[in-house]
Length: 508
Image (tube, rainbow, N blue to C red; front, side, top):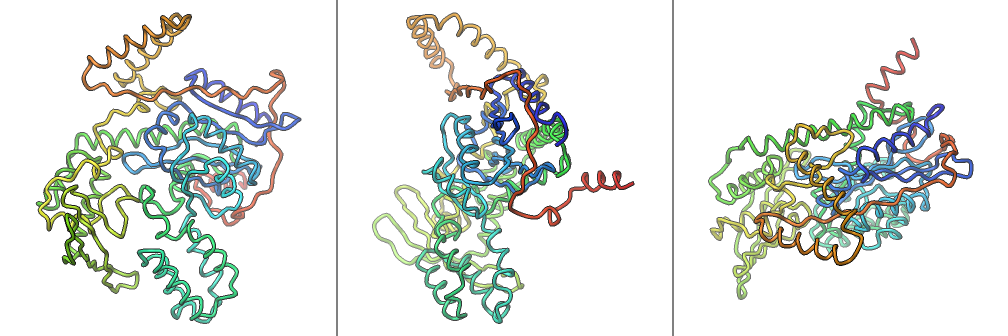
C-alpha cells in the first residue's frame, strides 16, 4: 500500500464530498489511527439504489492490494441487465464483526432500506452478519461456487462419473418442488452410500440457501451466483491488481466507474434510437419492443423462440382457472434432449399466468411456458404486472442526473437544470426553515405545483449520513497492517493483463 496510502484515501474522500456532499465515507481505524476497514458510496450510487436496490450480490474474493484487504463491492443490476455499483468497501478481516460493521455502514448510507434479496458465497461469517443486519432479506449462496466443488469433494468416489454426478445435478436443477428434491436427494445418498459424507450433510442442512426450488418466489434478476460481483471485479482488472497501492487505487477507481457510466449511456441511447425487429407475429412481442430496453427485449425474444419447443395440453378447468401441462424439449450438455413437464395455471378473469418453473418471479421476464398458454388463449396484451418498470427504457431515472466525480454532466441539459434547481432549493431551504409556518407554506406551494404540472412523479429524498469524524482531526491516517485472509491463495488468482505487464517491467 505504500507510505501515505491512508492519507491518500482520506484526501480522496474529501475531494469527493467537495464535488457532491451526498458522498458518504466511513473509516474504521485502530488506536494508532491505522486503517482497519473503509466504506464509501458516492451520490450516484445512493440515488441508483432507489431503483435497483431490491437485489444485490456481495463478494469479497477480489484482492486489490498487497496488504490483503479484499475489495468488497455491493453490486446491483440496472435496466439493461448490467452490473451497477451500489457502494464499496475495503476490509482487513472477514469475521462476523467486520461484516456487521460494513453492512451497517451501507444500510445507514441507504437510509435504512435493506435489500429484499442478497447473494453471497458460502461464508459462515457473512451469513451471521446478514442475519443480524438484514434479518428480513432472503439470503442465497452462490450455486456456482457449490457445484464447482463436486470434483474436489466427490471426485474420488468410484461412481462419480458413472451416475453420481448426474444424480446430484438432476436433484438440484431438474426438480420443481421441495418434495421432489428431497426424494431424489435421499435416493442418491442411499444408492451411492454417502450417508456419512459430512460435506453433503452440511449442504442438505442448508438446502434452503442454495437449492433453486427453495428460492422460488423471490426476485433474483435471473441470477443464481455472485457472478455480478465477479464481473465487476473483472471490470476493475483493467485498472487495478493485487500490487496496486491505495494512492493508485483512488485514481483508477473513478476511471473504471466512468467507463461503466459510458457503457450505460450508450445502451440508453441505443434502446431509444435503435429498434430491434420482431422475430414473430406474436403481438405480445411488440408490446415489449415498445417499452423494454434492447437488452431485456432480447431476453423476451429468446422466450418467444423457446415457445417453439413447448407443447401445451389442457388438463382441466375449474371455475375461471384452467390447468395446462406444458412439455418442453430441453437440450442436455452431452448433446441429447429430454422432455420436462411444467404445470401452468391460467386465471381467465384476472388474465393471470402462473407456472411451476416460477421464472417470472425470479427473473422479471415472463417465461416461455406462460407465453405459450397466452398464445393458446389468444391473449394479445399482457397486464401491467407482467411489464416491469424496472426494465423500461423511457423512464428518466434520477441517478443519471446526479453529479459525480466520474461523470461529466456538463453536456447533459437535464443534469444542468437538475443541479440548478438543487442549488436554488438548498439556498431557499436555509431561509425557510427558521419556523414551522414558513415550512408548511413552502410544502403547500410545492404540492400545488406538483398537481398542476402533469407528468411530474414524486421522488424519494435522501438524507446525508453523518461523517465518521476521528477525535483528533490533526492525527495522520496511517496505512493498515498486512493481514492474512481466507479464500483463494494469491498464486491461484487470475492475473490481470495490467499486473502481468507491471511484473514484467519490475523483473526487467
